[in-house]
Image (cartoon, rainbow, N blue to C red; front, side):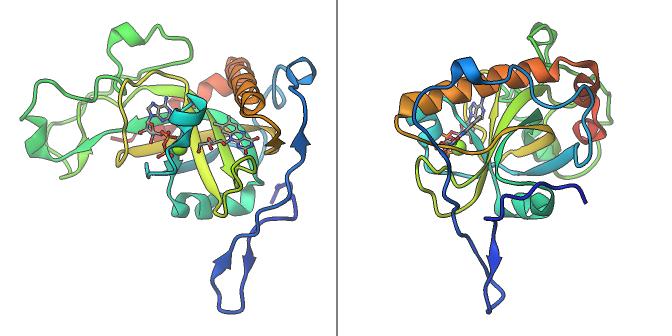
Length: 243
Ligand code: ADP
Ligand code: RBF
Ligand code: MG
């Protein structure tokens, strides 16, 4: 298996439970805009990528929006555990999709659906980096299903996997910032992610502003990296076509 290792991941205790030992992160003492690479990874995603993750969006500490102005949709522990052997902590990029699930009844109740942001009306298909694949489906199928008849829009994303050393978290989290303005929360919805590359390790910072600056550079790096044809192709990954 191809996986880099930072040597600080989880340790199994004698009782068989998993305890987390947050690693000491390198400290970024000054902003790094001028020294950062503009693109991450080679021209084609290589093993272990693509790494696919999915799960229900859960609550975190609420800091992403409030402190940083950069909301991050947090994946549940099981989603992290499923891919942990392939992934070191750090900042990743790839594609993401939010799937609003609804019961058959509620599909016919409201004409003011809250799904308009995640679905793909033609007006959003021109947004940079977003895509829509209109696949018709029968209205009668499973009891939990997509709120409409086509797969939701796929957007570029950056993901932080680790302990957020700036905040000294004691639990590992996987948090996905999707580069799209949703105008609303989507806690409880399904988040699907195809991870295609690694940008950098997690760092500690002396100021909040330096952390925000680095995240914004991560976003630029992700956009540039995903423009390459072999990365763009994963917008149509089968994971995103499932209804
Ligand atoms: P929490 O700590 O609960 O994760 P955040 O402040 O990080 O709170 O906000 C994350 C929530 O914001 C997500 O769970 C999602 O419901 C919502 N959200 C809205 N827009 C986005 C976006 N572009 N990317 C990620 N999450 C978003
Ligand atoms: N937290 C850190 O402590 N160090 C980091 O280097 C770091 N990099 C991040 C990069 C990206 C692209 C994102 C989305 C988040 C990053 N975070 C980092 C996590 C950030 O602290 C977290 O999203 C907020 O605390 C909200 O949970
Ligand atoms: Mg969050």
